[in-house]
Length: 428
Length: 148
Image (cartoon, rainbow over all chains, first blue to last red; front, side, top):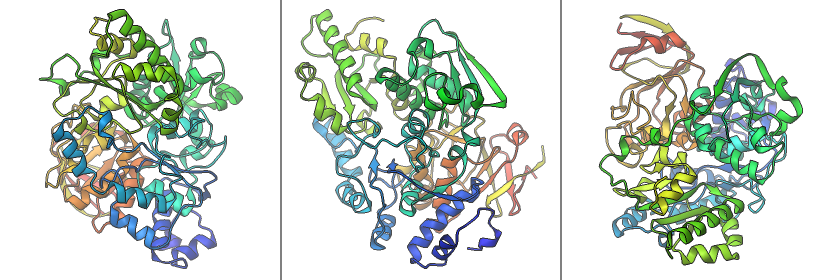
C-alpha cells in the first residue's frame, strides 16, 4: 500500500503492520480498515474501547464471512482483545417453530456448517455460546457500552440503540468489517464517531394525538431521512423524560425500523436521550430540514401489505413475535394480552401457532414465571433464535409485529393491537 | 440523452454496462436476499419495497443509487455475489458512499480476486438523469458517460 497517497493519517505502528510486521493476514485486516477509513474521510483510526457486537451469526456465506476467510484468520492466531456478542442464532431449534419436514430439511442443508462455524466464533472471541441476541445491551445479557465508548458494532438495530440511547459511538458497520475492526482493535474516526457527525440534520416534530406505534413512526422517519440524524421533538409528552424500561423498549422498536426503512444510525429525542438532555437543540445543524409527523403522515397497516402476500390466505397460520428480541417487560406485556385474549374468546389454546423470541438470558429468567407456564399451556413456543428466514414460512401466511421481519420475509406486519385481534380471530 | 458526470473513484476501473436505477435508498440485503443462497448467473432484485427494481436482473448491471439502506447483514453480500459470479459490475452513488456499502465493497475487493467498480458523489443530477437500461461507460478517473 502506498501510504503517501492516502489522506488518512497513520501511526508508525500502523505503518509497520501494513509493512507486514505482524504477518500477511494482519496486514490484510488492517489494510481493509485503513481503506474503509480513507473512503469514509476519516482523519485517523481510533482504538476501540469496549466489546463488540457483530451481526455475523449464520454459517451462510453472503450473511457471514466464508469459512475459508475465518480459517485464514484463526490460523494466524487472531482473536479480539475484548470478547464480543453476536446476533441471534439461526432457527435450528425446530421444536419451537412449527416447521414442516421439508422446511426442517432445507434449514439443515442451509446450516450444515453451523456447528463448525460456532466453534470458529468462539476461537475468534465470542464471549460464550449463549451470547447471541439482537438485544445485547439488556442488563440480563450484559454487553452494555458506556457513554462515549468507541465501538465497531454492526446489526443496525444495535448500532442505533448504542448510539442514541446509550450515547456510545459506533458507525453502521456491515458484516465482516465488524469482525475485522474488532480484530484490529481499531475503527475509523469518521461519521457517527465525531461530534460533527452526531449533529442532527433533520428536525422531526411529532404532532400526533397519541403516542405513535413505534414501528410506524420508525418507518416514516427512516424513509424520510435515509442516513440522516433526526432530532425528534414531541415524544416526551407521551413517554416522559429520560430513559426507563418503557421508553427503552419503545426506542428499541422505533430505532430498529428507522435503521431498516432507512440507514439511520443515530437519533436524538428531546428530553429523553442522553445527548439531547445535555445539549438540547444545540445538536441541530444550521441547515437542518424539518419533517412534521401527524396522524395522517403515518402509514396505515394495510400500506405495508405488498405484492408478496398475493395468493396467500388472509387467515394467519403462524405468528412471530420478538424481532428484535423482546425484553422481560415486553414478554410480560404480551403474556398479559394473550391471557386476556384467551379469556375473552373462551379458548384454551392460542389459535395461531405463535413463536416468541428473546435472548437466552431473558428466556431463562422468564421461564421461572407463572406467565411462562400460562403461555406454554396455551401453546406458545419460545426461541432464542431469529425468525428472519423466509424458509420458515414458505407458502404460509405469517403475521408479525416486526416491520423488520416484514421487510426481509413474506411475513405481514401489523401493529400490536391489530395483531392481537387477528390472533384470536376477531376483527380490529 | 448523452451526458457526462464526474465523481470520486472509490474502486476505480474502466467498464461499460446497463443501468439499474433506485432513486430511493437501495436495500442490499433485501435486494439480494434470494441471490446469495443460489448458485446462479442471475441476481433478480427481491426487494418488494423497491418498486423501481423489484423483479429486475441486477447481475452484470450497474446499480445507480443515492445510498444503501437496511440491515448491516448486507455487508457480506457483495463478497458472496462475487464468489457466486452473479454480482453487479459497478455501483454508482449520487451521494457519498455510506459506511455499510463502503465496508462491504472494500472487504469484497481486498478479500476476493474480482472488483466491483465504485464511484460516489456523482451528484443529484446524475440520479435525476439516469434511467433503467441506459448504457453507462465508467472511466478510471471517476467520470461516467450515460448513453455515450
